[in-house]
Image (cartoon, rainbow, N blue to C red; front, top):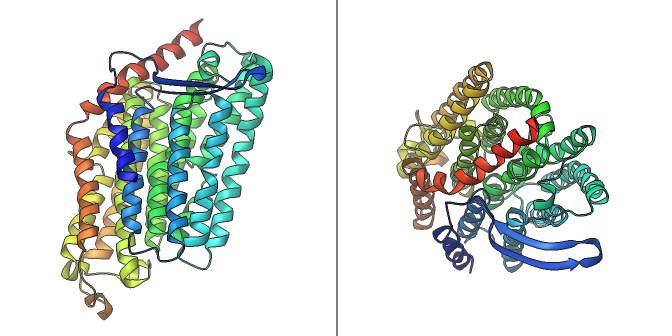
Length: 455
């Protein structure tokens, strides 16, 4: 069923008109007429690939869960379908209030997935931390949406897009939306919930969390924050760039010091997501397009890394990095797959991450050379923790006799790795098929910012 949904989403890409920045496949139903509220959906070159990424990763998550989840199986898969529905609506909705409803609805199935099917005794605490932390941050956006409705008389995105707000109010709106999205990304100091959620979530839950859910925050910034509040965006950009740099360096250094495999990748995700925000707030075509490509890439690479950790946990039931070492002797195919993910995480040429990071750095250099130099330090630290991570798992002599007991990848695991790796190189070697769809939509946002700022 989930694979069928993925196949149904592909015509959206195949039939997409690349020559226009207008929304396509529009669908509108009147909801509450007296308040001018509508269930309004549409896709442009920005939202298109997040729909594809969602429908692509959901069947991967279900394949990962096959033979691993052994309690309440029906309920478990139903939650994934509910989550998929909420994510698709979140990425395609063109009404702020409806967006908020589905933006928050995502929390409920993920809360249950972590709390019921999590891997350790702290899963209840982690699920509550995830739910309450992200819900609390989003309340500010809800207040701002209500005030926007009372001020403008609608929450329709396309009407608000051309509205001109008082600058003082616009700054408050911006801060409210930014706080909500920053918690989801997450940015420092709102990142506390992410490592806990990843450590306690089942493998498929971690794949979904890193692969798609974190993108809700960065997508929200591109779709709503930057175009709706352009003057405030320019005003706050220097502060956000500094916060991104601090987050990148902090998360990278913290990843180096971790001993739990999932925590290492969780902090790596924080660093990569903040690099993406850096590209968004470079306010250049290269930076914005690079951020979108990097979001898709991170969805694939982080999914592969978390799945690799899941393969080890299913066999040895520990994520303590010192337990491992020398796995290249007993699981060579696994180590080859992990090596490819690690190289992609380091943005080697040919991988999807390389395209995204090069475009982001080009955009940031164009906007602020000093910021770009500090960003490259974060990239260097990313290489350090990635290589240390791989070296401690795969190289050296086997220190633990139990590592000799288990087998290499199963056919199911090999198939999942093959699918993810193939798509990582597809995006890395042929980025034009993605970039050509988003170019007009990205250009429209930047033209809108320039027009709003000068007029």
